[in-house]
Image (tube, rainbow, N blue to C red):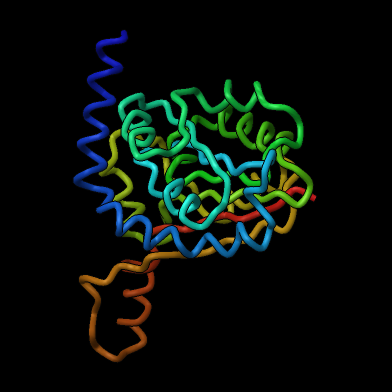
Length: 225
């Protein structure tokens, strides 16, 4: 129902404010992706970047500050209102419906931060197929998601978000992206834990630190030829 949807929207806005980090934290983490987009020539007039699940608009704000043309879509109407209020371009829309309404080769890049783990498998495949269709040759995708290789993530922090479906191991998402037609898919492992680390200088401690407190997230980056 509409009321239930609005209640969930407001829950998620409050949830993000507590669990996701400050705008500056998020922008600091996302800044590493700017070079990837620049190298791909993304965000030119008539071939914008689309950010899927744009949330509070941190990435869109960063792109605007760096003169990369971009807009976002999100299912959460309250998030979209917040983002638009910052002078950014964002629309309240379902991502698959939105992509289906776009022309072939009309985007230079498609990004999504902590989105793919929310999608049912069939929807994720549709999403990748539509993404490939709407990207211009040489265009790139960048999708960041929690990294279940790190046990603390796979067993605990992934489930902080009640709307998450299931963790996706890096090799599986890399395979899916390549299977649907993207090229040169690579995995970037990111944001290792900084607390709880074992300080003993032993091989066992090093191994445990890696599997328990390693990268919290990873990104798959790939391009359309």
